Length: 224
Image (cartoon, rainbow, N blue to C red; front, side, top):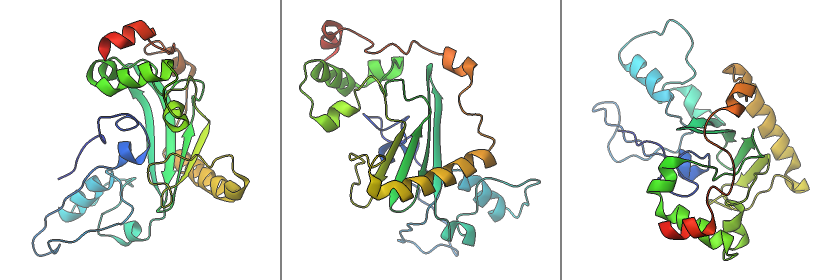
């Protein structure tokens, strides 16, 4: 049993923070998995396909990006990866790499707001309206206001163990320069391995308007 999407909330679903990537996974396999165990291996949902094929005794005709959940490849894995591109008619591009301690998010379209137009969210996330109103009135603290900004930093680096809510961006800190460089190198190697095409001109021109703010203060106040 696996969940989907991450939580439907600010900085959750469709974003690469842990609140958007972390989904529950519960497995039951009598005779193979003891009940009541909790595993902290670095896993991805693409590992499920490889696991099912292994359980079924099927050898895939080509290499898979995922690995069987009970295999040594997963137990020794240092990093997991994530990506976000087109979400509904909202075009944005983000890539991330996560170890057990650090998370690096590379925003490939940093000129766009996190909260550029998304019809679904603007109709279904009441808190989004409230955040926009408070932001326009200057009522948010700096951590809250950062997500409501008109643009994004190119890189976001977080120490997950010290900062589990991913608030303090360490990407420009000299103290973490080596960590950032190493994670960015590994992320780019992964992107090359999956033939990541990045952001094309066609993608950048497509989708809903990226104009931000998407509404006036008066219009947002009607939705609160």
